[in-house]
Length: 215
Figure 1 (tube, rainbow, N blue to C red):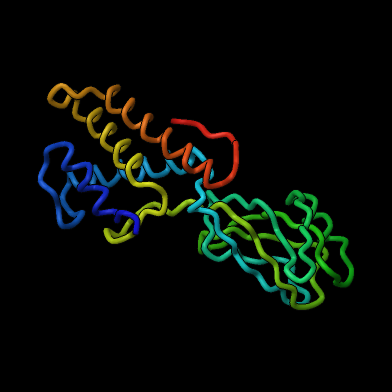
Figure 2 (cartoon, rainbow, N blue to C red):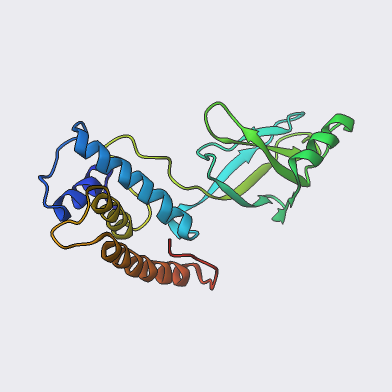
């Protein structure tokens, strides 16, 4: 399993030679927890981690064109949409095009296009398909979904933990100045070395030579 939010905080606390905590109620543990969330976002943005690839299933309803992607958030990237019965991909369009097409649409049919058109009150992405479906069609939205910021101590990290707590450590060192001779730039260099190693492993797991960035 992945490290929990609390375990990530304590991994940083230990390296700062601070007492470990059993909760995230103290002022200093909350500061470290904020650094952990900042570091998590930075590492998630460094590459398309295989652990964050998810398929969101949607079954269309007759005469309904808009659907909420359950579990998605405003950092989600929809990579492709596949119609399950025919194994064909829907064509990505723009929100403006589909809004315009909706205004002139008559009747319903089989969807061939899709676009992200907004965000639901739940925080999930809202997508529109066109033409408006005439009935039930199973669609698979293949997505990259970074985790929401951690709030609960027991929430588990999906991506590799080592680069996350090492970046959070560097941020904590910077916040309070030099730490017994360990400088911020040295801590960041260590983080970047570790992150590079995990990025290579992730690329190998993806079977890809895709772009990634150590940040």
